[in-house]
Amino acid sequence: MISSDVWTVAGENLPAPRTSGAPRSDWAAGLHRIWLRAQTTTDVTGLSDELYDLLLTVPRVTVVTGCRFSSNGRALYLRSSAEAGSPPVRVLLPAGDAWSRAGVPPAHGEVRRFRADDSHGRARPEQPVWEAASATHVVECTLPLEDGDWAAVAVGLAGDGQAPPALPAMLGQVCDVVASCNTRILHERENARRQARDALLAEASLQMDSSLDTEETLQRVARMTVPAVAEGCLVHLRYPTGYRLVAAAHLAADARESFEAAGRDPVWLAEVLPKVSDLREGVVLTGEQLAGTPFAGHGAAPSGTVTVNPLRARGRLLGTVTFAYQRGAAEIAGPAFLADLALRAALAIDNATLYEQRRQNVRSLQQHLLPAVLPEYPGLELAAAYEVGDAALDVGGDFYDAVAGARSFSLVVGDVCGRGAEAAALTGLARHTLRTLLEDDVAPAAALTRLNRSLRASASSKFVTAIVAALAPRGDGSFALRIATAGHPPVRVLRADGTVHSLNSAPGPLLGVLDDYALPEATEVLRPGDTAVLLTDGITESRAADGAFFEDRLSRVLTGLADHGPRELVTGLARAALDFGRGCADDMAVLAVRAGTATSRDERRAER
Image (cartoon, rainbow, N blue to C red; front, side):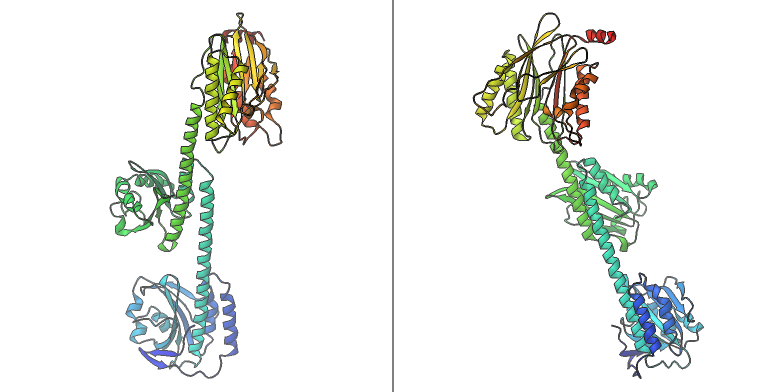
């Protein structure tokens, strides 16, 4: 509340004149009108027209002035009005220290009176305006503004300077309204900034967490903070050999190259970033603190202010994020916001990095569960494909193998239920058990029966499906095919004429479930040009959005691939199944063997 209990005249405190009665009704109405407008305006200077007009209605007031001062007393600009109904005149003032020359300013809310031509009045930037309006005395009141600035609202009095008794209360009321309006605007602006920064943090988390690709996450950290947070952003990661720039973004296209070069500056990498990283919180670097760095005034990427925050996640230092600013200090985000943003970025980067490491580990483990190279066998062409369908990238249980025995050549495709370490262990057990047996030419049904015995002995809670196909040459270019199936999708035979035949041998029970176990075998002949296709249920059970299964179109797809070799066939089949069931969560394994040489196949193709 503005106080009008004390007037100051020439530096002396004097009792304020006693007021005689309440202000005039038109003053009360005008003040109420200004107060109502003050509840909604977004700019305190918007009140000046009505405020100045209202003060000009007071008897003997010839001019009203409002002058804004910075925290160090420098006059910034002056607004004045000497005629009601005319917009106030705004004048930018030259740099100076006007209030220091005019004495110590009064406390905010204190009303004071002085002569316009005394030493105090002559030192004021408003003095020419008062003189032009023939004001002999001045009554003023000060009020605080944002960022330490303040304003002096003054009225110039003509004649002998005798002010109406109610003038101190009137001026105090006006300043009360202006101060209250300014406080509301500042609070609303701060709330808006807070909401905008909260929204930015929320959006940043969504954007950075939406990708588990490390490089993409790093680029998003840099791109989405420019220009929302700063004009430039650099992201550095820490490696055993030091810091390395991994992402950069700058608002100005012509400055991006030099800005990235600044991020690779040896002084910045070897001296500044290691020191900042040792701190728990970010730092703000300005002026001399930037000396010797590429962000100094004559450096590669001069910036008025630079902030650096460490990127820490789960107790580990990952690197740093640097923001370069060309905006004013008041527009730079606070340390709490930057720390929160850095934490979210660090978590997103750490998640992406851990995911990438896990993906590489899974890929390596999966490769060790599959044969590195498929063997060759006279009169047969062989190819396999494996597609990972699980977005979580746990190691899957699908496997395949090809084993050359003394009298036959055997193919194996299997699937361990579930994913993860236990599934991987059972996959290794199943594949290597069957390989050992098939190298000794054990029949398909007998090999699967003995695998069942091993799985039961392992006391695993998981089951396995598998199919074994043994091919024996018949001497005329064809192969006798013996097949045993344990709960697995059947073999498809793509004939030389493009027709597809499903070998629906009676599937035996799942492996690893029953102790009393027996399997039947089926036989078939694979003639030159015929292709046997073994696959897992990731292919057949690939499901479209409308609920249709890929198994319903499997024969049609195979027919369309009839003119291709086994390598193109398995790749095309796996890709078709993936495209059909987008988002499929199951792995896919497919193994194809074709009887006959490439030359004979080309001859048959030419005959069609």
